[in-house]
Image (cartoon, helix red, strand yellow):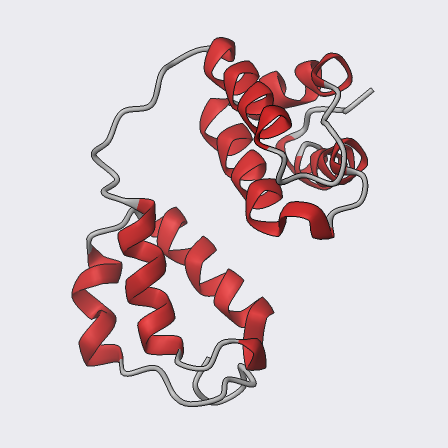
Length: 141
């Protein structure tokens, strides 16, 4: 990222090594990918990594299990007022359940992070599901 990530300043790896080590590999990769996508919009990449990891909390926290937690998260996002439009849980239920709870929650967090910039949250999630399910050998339709 420091060489080709189009960052405003280099990441101080010594400052963030312990923070990233405290995350599961998949979570650290998502965080770094988001930083790469944000690129020049992030004034201090080192602080961004530390702040984002701190806001995400420890990987040891257990979320509620089952499809109920995904449905509850959709309802929470719909009622929060931060989305441009509500998500249609009936349309998304099958794809999200086949994706698995952990990945579904990550995808819903991505929608939450983007907030009102996503004009059609249901369409956005369906697009992401189409991209993620086929590599796992699971057809979307």
